[in-house]
Length: 142
Image 1 (cartoon, helix red, strand yellow):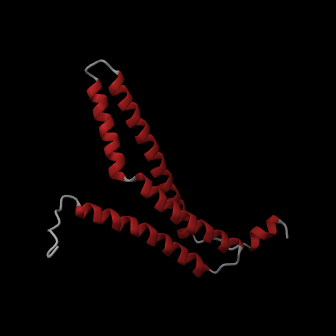
Image 2 (cartoon, one colour):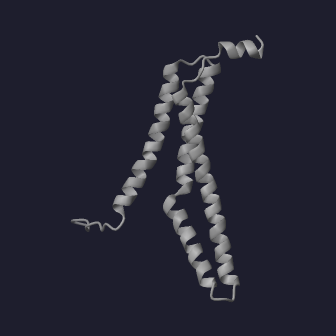
């Protein structure tokens, strides 16, 4: 069977699944790019702040602090890994669906698994936001 015949017999991936795959890949890439560029700007501003002998050094220091604050708060690394993991799971399922004769149900379960991975990230972020500024009561009987 040549490639043209194989493509004709290959099932097409539902548009919603293909769109989800593209969204997850885009989000993982943006998180990776954001992490890199915010880090580069922060380091550059920090170097400028220490190297400059002018009143503008404090502005560079402020930019550096903002960059590293955004980097820590946005947790680009966690976002990247979650979206990349979800994308990889779905990409592998699409390949099995198209070329390994996996059923549509297998593909839809991969979408659900990816969504569950992303939901974990959202829950962690929500818990972190709720816990900010709260003081735990002391343990009783300790």
